[in-house]
Image (cartoon, rainbow, N blue to C red):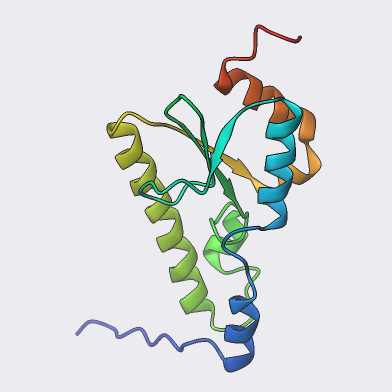
Length: 146
């Protein structure tokens, strides 16, 4: 007989805290905007495209996603539940499903002619030179202004 996995919904306190997590206008999006402005790269913010990218570079098919390390399962410790104290099964499942969804989204967009680029929050906030170098390269500015 198959073992039934019981997943409890989050508590009211956790749900309240999670509702405060912003989908748009987050610190990492604002910082990415600053990088794009500094490099004078024209973009569309929150374009209405499958997968909800954060930015689309104008006159290109380049899409940029600003991903939170936790929500998008960057760290193996989060995906395996080592860092999670409560409701581990729920969160491990949630983070792994988010990661699978990101892969499906990337595949769909690439198959439809888009160039998909994902940036981690820690890089956007703590490694601006690397982020700007990558933005120059994907926007076609790599041969200019260097």
